[in-house]
Image 1 (cartoon, one colour):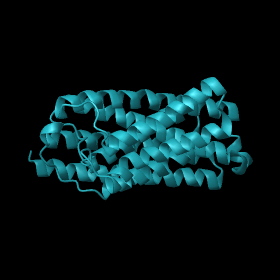
Image 2 (cartoon, helix red, strand yellow; image 1 turned 90 degrees about the vertical axis):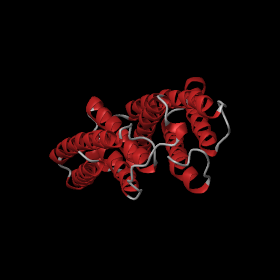
Image 3 (tube, one colour; image 1 turned 180 degrees about the horizontal axis):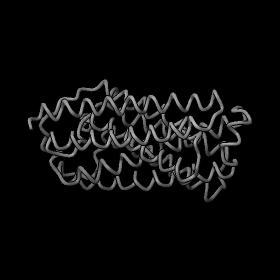
Image 4 (cartoon, one colour; image 1 turned 180 degrees about the vertical axis):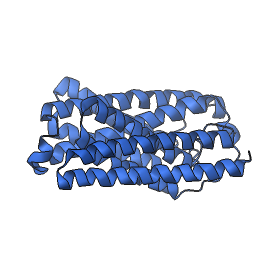
Amino acid sequence: MSSQSFSGIENVLFTCAMLCYFLAMVLYFIFIAAKKEKFARIAFFVQAGGFAVHTVALVVRGIGAGRLPMTNQYEFATSFAWGLSLVSLIFVWKYKFQVLGAFSTPVIFLIIGYAAMQSRDVLELMPALRSNWLGFHVSTAIIAYGAFGVSFALGIIYLLRDRLGSFLDAHIPSSARLDQIAYRSVSLGLLFLTFTIVTGAIWAERAWGSYWSWDPKETWSLITWIIYMLYLHMRMRRGLKGRAAAIFAIIGFICVLFTYIGVNTFLPGIHSYA
C-alpha cells in the first residue's frame, strides 16, 4: 500500500475522531442543559469511540510514515489531543465524574482542531530526530500535557462549582475530594514532565552535544515544571488547597499551551518543528 493510501485512510479516521469529540462535547452540554444523566453516559461512550478511532489514525499515520507520528506540529497536536482524551476518560471512569467530561471535551476539540489546521505532509526526518529517544521524550510529554489538561478542567470546575446549580453540584465530588483529584492529576503530569525534560536533555546531548541550550522551548518547559513543582511544594509545606490550588493548576496549563503553541509562534528555536 502506498503512502498516499495510508494518508487517505488516516485523514478519514482523523476526521471521524474529530467529529466524535465534537459530538461528545455537544452531548455533555445537553446533559448540563437538559439535566438528564443519560446524555452524559452516551457522551462518555462517544468520546471513548472517538479515542479508539483516534488511536487507529495515529497507528496508520505511523505505519504510512515508517516512524513514530510525533515529529511535527500536526503530529504532536493530534497526539496531545489523544493524550488529553485518554487521561480524561480514565479520570471520568475512575471517579464516576461525568461533569469532568463536559469541561475536558471542549479542550480536546480545540486542540485537535488546531491539529487540523496544520500541514499533514509526511516529511523526511531531520538527522537530530533519528533517535530512539524520540519515542520516550515525546510520549512522556503527551501524557504530561494530558494530565495537566485534566487538572485545568478540574480547576475550572472548582472555581465555578457554586454557580453550576444543584443538579450539577450533585454530580460533582465534594470540594475536598475535587481538590484531591486535581492534586493527583497534577502529580501525574509533573512526574511525566520530569521524564520529558530528563529524556530531552539526554537526547539533546546525543544530537547536539549539550544537555541544555536554553532554547525557548527548553526554557518554557522548565518554567512550566517550576510552576507545577511550586504547586506541590506549597501543598505539602504550606497546605495549598482549594481556590488557590485551582488557580495554580489553570495558570500551569496556560504555560503548557504557551510552551507548545506560543513558543513555536513567537519564539522559534531548534524545537520549532513541534
